[in-house]
Image (cartoon, rainbow, N blue to C red; front, top):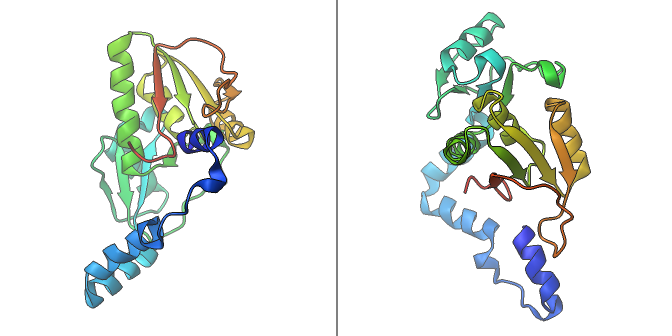
Length: 211
């Protein structure tokens, strides 16, 4: 998104033709669904709407330990959980008891975070440590800080982590989650983003693609 905004600023946006409808995301998704055939398409749609699982991961002592998180959630009355494909992730069947989201952010023992997001954060943590034993990290386009929080627990206090985003409201959420987090508003798509500091490692996952 930042790259697209930058390109638009550098060009005559009004002269750029709109893409054909069949090249837009919605049309591509529709093509993919249609390719499944009538029966499988209906099953896929129902599964997406009714049976899509929740993916969670632990925080603090529950971070990285899927079985410990499962045991904790079972004590709260939840069932039908299995370890996910990313270490420490837990897949919970939908349609079960609702998760309690009224707990203070700083006291949360788990967070919802899909497997792609967890996987990219896990890779980022490993890469950061390959650069330095005590890396100074910037999570660019940090949003609400879910990946930032992952890095915090994965690196176990060995790193100094900062977060930036163009949206102050999202940075406030990140700060609620990690009160010690250093945050700054910055538009990385602009020529002068007003970003201060120097970093050993920068994570850019924009916009939350898992790339």
